[in-house]
Image (cartoon, rainbow, N blue to C red):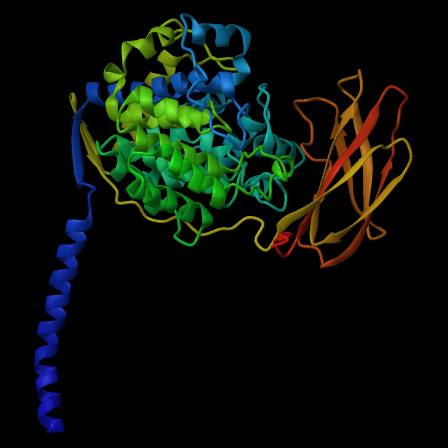
Length: 519
């Protein structure tokens, strides 16, 4: 009996293998919504590229009036978000810094335009760091790092950048997706080179994901497919992937109630334990939370431009960047011509005007991205025959897994609040710290030299510029310390009477979450 059974098993094994192979192949083919190739005219490609940039600027301008004014709360329905005549023109004149998520994009585009599609990472990094425009959070921390010899990817790594999980690359990754129509893996390669200038982990994933959504918006018309397929570029085990998956799941569970999904997101995902400025306050610049708001706008907007940017804005927090991202992705699907004139009327007034800190206007950005897209298409196996473009599409693959601040959790803020006119000492229990503060002096060229001692040993002698452009976003920080009581002391080496070094809050990190619930 054993011999007979063995013979039967052996004889049917090839059939079983063939069946599994056929079944798996068929399932893979059925499961794949990404076509092998897509054909479109040059006019169609340009229309989608213009729609992407137009949506980006319109969304940013619409939400600019409430940027970080509603933190930890949605913007109520009775709050009027206006769109008067000349809205964008007025921002260009009076508040050009609103468009930080545009002009950083333009910097990277200019480098690719000047050096070609294989532009080296250091050229991109130095163009960014030595630009004239103001920066904040992960961007400014990276600028300081690069100016002091810490080059990418170290400039964005969480041990060198306490803002590694912040939103920065997420709001300036648009160009990478717009120049890679239908090619999410190509946009991921670009994101690897650019995004690690200023971010790591979830902060980097935000840009990878946004860029991938743009690429798929060129070839898919179903928003739910765009957001779910693009998420395949993000490793499943990352908290970023888990958060986006939750939003997609809650959308299915509450298809007619975006506010319920917002509440579920607040309850589960909005404890920012890393950005020193966002610890223990409603302010949240975490990439995944703000990208969740982008997703809420895209899914509940249901392809309607007005509804999409309004919902993304009303989710709060970074309420200019989030509708900008959502409107840019939807604008790619719709194309410029299908964006309602109500929204484009203000845009047309500035399409020939250069953005602040740039020699690039909207009309020029359209052309640059179009030319980049043609080069990327041909470089990746596509073709251009007259007016007809053939894109070889890519099925999204996950990028490498990385996790910032692993094993670190903010669990205390110690109010130091002292001027460093004499040596200052303080202590904390934990495995890491970040000290906020600033340097002030009428002389904007002044650079304070301050020593930080950790447990009696010199940890660092830091240059702390007064200049907003060159400033260090936190005065000092250190992670991955032994778990014990640590002592800090600070000494100002070059004091002057008209200057001040102000020590602010000391954010302390532990290896466990502080659960101080009394129930």
